[in-house]
Length: 145
Image (cartoon, rainbow, N blue to C red; front, side, top):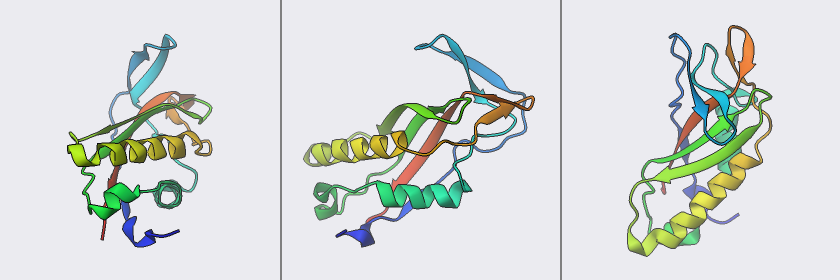
C-alpha cells in the first residue's frame, strides 16, 4: 500500500438534494424511464462519508500520475442507480489529457469504473415514495500531497 499519502479524495455531491418537481429522460439502452431529478436522491450505504472511505480504499492512483505529481483535475463518474439499488452503465469523464499522462489517466479511469461497478447496493432514489432508476454524477478529485 505504497503512496497512501497520495489519496485524498474529496467528493462534491453534484446530485444535490433539490426540492423540485421530478423530471425524467428515457435511457436509450433499455428504453426505460431513468430520472435526472427525484424527490429523494439515491444514497450509498452509510452516506457520503462511507462513500468517501469506500472510494479511498478502492481507487488506486497509478504510479505514472504519482511520479509526475499530476493534478487529475475534475473527474466525474456518471452512472445509473437502478430502482433495486444496483449501479450500472458507469462512465468516467475528465479534462483533456496531457500526452505524457494519458496512459496513467486511462488506468486511473479504469480503476474508478471497477470500484464503482463493485459497490454494494445503494438506497435507490424515490419519486412519490416509490423506488426509481436515477442518473447520478459523482465528482471525484484526487489531490497529490
